[in-house]
Image (cartoon, rainbow, N blue to C red; front, top):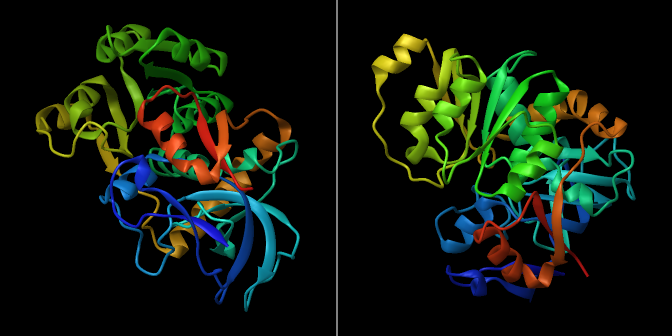
Length: 326
């Protein structure tokens, strides 16, 4: 098969479409013929040499894919060769085939074609596990999503609205904010010339956000805590704004607030299986009904993954950038 390899860390040109050995599904795994994968920030960090795959997982980038089951490994039940699926991966999505633990498979949602389904697993599992399983967003509460026009952001808006929450977003252009509004966002903040702390307070009569989904890390830590409501929950899922910052614990105590920080890729298999099962139970009916949908910016050939990485690094996209196999 062919896969995107990274002979040496570096810029987008470090991604090489090369012939490699086919993967073999192990105990409890299936082999998926990949139709498409999607670009995530973690893939960029891996390409740069800053985010190695977990031990035992594929060395190729790609944290999600869609495709058809080509082979069942030992001990797999409930799936058949030929089933159309999408999957959460620890790596290996930038390839023509990938071995996947059966517990990380999801069936193709109704009305969503096989290619576009690649836009779902990573974002849905990230949003559901952080916003709902950990931060426990409830109907009537306010969610603040940083990077509202990203793949994570566009899914978070839709899922929060589906459960009856109010949604505030930050983004860096009028076009991006307008797209967020189309998806249901109630409060639109251009981070280039507006203070999200002040805007969220105004929109909530001074209360603040009950839950914040943050991809920036250090740069926004202090302001995120100030933007929280009493009993608010800050869920950190990224560090685009750095890894070290000072925290005013007095403010946190006064608000009786909580901070969580998670990554999905390195979680144990059991935890990922539980998250995928929860997503199938709670989110898949929303996808099947059309209430929630994947937002795809563009599709590019997987062999041209370098171009896709450039698009994501320039932050000009809205939703997901997909990589399609030949």
